[in-house]
Image 1 (cartoon, rainbow, N blue to C red):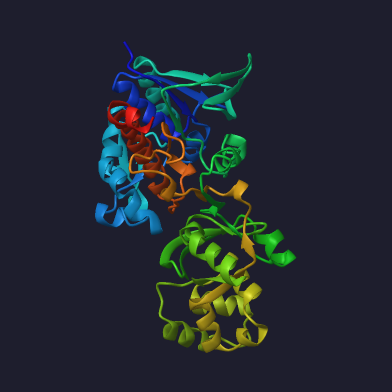
Image 2 (cartoon, rainbow, N blue to C red):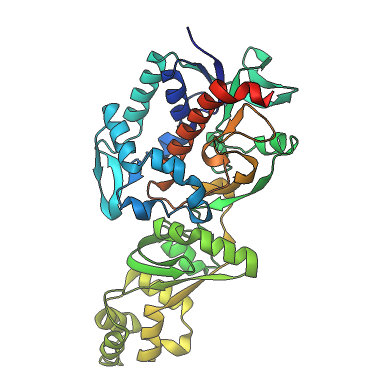
Length: 408
């Protein structure tokens, strides 16, 4: 016989992972998911290759969560990147380490893993109710809106795993912020994370190079210097290298009203070498020819130089070389949160206990992207969602066994 009735609100990675832990412990678990299907954002993340975790040394991995690294440490220690890989293998999904130590399923897709996962949950008795949207509280009960009508539930424990505010069309619309705030729960402002940025491009740049990738470059901000690539978009810049800097750039824009991403277009060549090679070029040749022969720059990199370098510097080899090595891209602001891969902000950690239970709502727990943390892309986000889902599930078990009567 099941021990307790537990409601999980949200059918994303954190909620599903909690359901697995709770149901394996013998509890009756019901997942209430507003969308017609489970794991929509999880599937979108795996559309071009599911980056499930990261294979860098764990001592470095656990520092990738900024100011919340220490807070998340116990959850991550209990479900490390290697544990993620072992878990996926247990569901029949083998993984491999790709570029930059990112870990992917050998199939590169999310759907086979999700199908096997849902099959396991079904076998463990988890009830999944789609098109069942949580719409707030009614006293101690939760109101659910479903195709058959509105009803209230009063389970023994609740886990909220509703995600942040990115990609609301997939279910994460952050409607929960008002309902929790009304209960006195502190919520840090939700802001775009792992996002693109607006740039005031000329029509030539926007119309001629939107979608063009800048490959084999490095970029520098307050976050540090990283190598990789990014894409010129119609609005500005986006892509993995930009996302690695997005938190630092967003914070700088909010604090000072301006920010720049400084790009090295030729990280494999020293400034002095570039300047000498440019100086040797035939002055009668076109600028594009001199730049291609002297620095190996053409295409979108050439366009970016024409766009951002003062005309007076284009003819001076030394000044042009400095721009090639340290080209600042001035940013107007981050793209809207609805377009971001993830969001920062959410339920603050000082409102939950070590078991991920809300201090103001005994028996109600929170996991995943609803919490106030952020991380770069590269498998960090997904691993932390898994880990906090499992940590909250263990917290629920502990509370049901030892703390429930004490909190009443």
